[in-house]
Image (cartoon, rainbow, N blue to C red; front, top):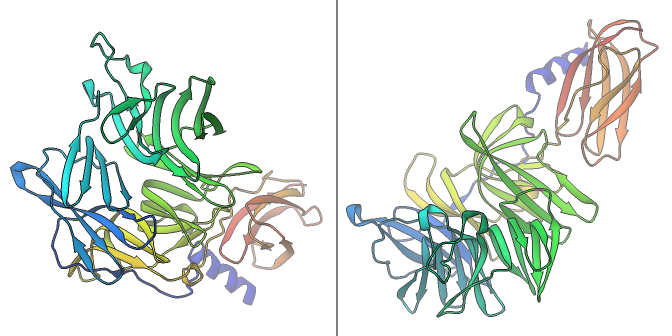
Amino acid sequence: MKRTLTLICFLLTSGLFNFIMAQTWNPLLHPAEFGGAMGMRATHNNSRITTLHVTDFGNYGYGITPLSWDGNQWHQGTTSDPMSLLDLKDILVTGDSLWVLGRGLLLYHANQWSFFEIPGHYPAGISYATSLDWFNNQLYVGGGFCPKLQDSTWYHQDSLVALISFDGNNWSTVSRFTGFIRKVETIGERLYMCGNFTDTLSGLSAGFGYLEGTTFHVIDDSHVYTDFVKTDQGYYLRISDFCFISLEPIGRIFFQSPSGLQEITTGQHLYTSVMTMMLFDQKLVIAGCFEDTAAGGQVFTHVAALDHHGNLYRMGDGLNGMVNDLAVFNNTLAAAGGFTSGNNQPPFFTAIWSSPFIALEKAVVPIVGDPYPNPSGGMMHIPVSGERSTIEVYSLSGRLVHHEKVSGLNAATYHMIDLSKLPAGMYMMVSSNDSTQKAWRVMLTH
């Protein structure tokens, strides 16, 4: 009777998270009022964070104001002149300078704003800048560009240049890379790039790779990646597609390690929109709005975390709004966007999270798939997952007729069991681990 009640309770609560401790984000209030924080970066020495805040000037356009937090107080910069169209793609903090990439390049230095037009930018809506970083004493900008030829004609769209550079005065076209680069980032002596591009010097095409010296190395060429995060164990790689049925972007996240490429969102999490991602406390923190199908279709907005096994860690509540960007500052995680508290007062645009992930809700280890074959003559493959899994088979009267433990797993897989000694008929099968459970009706035919 006890097991029957346990089974009924499980069927009613399948997919729920096990709460360890409820936690919230803490607002990082600043004295000025702005329309929302668009971007956020931490300086290279990790001594402060910088955010960009938007001011709506009505018919005159938008202005952006840099605000920086040194751990004790906010420092407000000079607001830029109104711009007719604000299209923020990336920001970069180097020393006491702030670079802002949009439909052009903005430099904020010594309380002054300077604008540099990107050559060939937006001819017929074709060229597009996406990301920037310093490499070998030059500023590199990734995207898809159509610079003019010597006869003043444009490159054809199929001949997009994927990388350009800026030395502080002049632009140069890195003509060896064609296609489209979504993100560039300098790590050590390497310039990492992701997108859909080709190195014409070597003839190699890639979705993710890096330039070291003058040699280009391909890490993966199986997908068109929109974002990446490097870890000591490998790389998190994200792709974004467009669903014409729901008219929303759908994201998938992979982990690239020496053992190969593995998708960590298969059958677990359907991402409807991921704004940004960053490594914190050895987890991949993702910000946006997404649905966790392993937790009964719960929709999460704001922030959550994944490990490279695909386990989901939902972070605490406390943000009503949307996160636009993330940064790591003095061993804390900061989020920028436009938020309100639980009672919608007062508004704030920056929040911090300093708790370790052990205090988050317990990770769901999803059980993916269905038993097969079903109906079966006795030998059946059952989906299991997690370090400790249990398979139980019940008769329709609720009597336990088979019990089996499986251990040593770190990902979703299948385990074969032998039910040939049971009478033919209908049974309830339950696969469970420390985080979640799943049940099916199965038929034995013999």
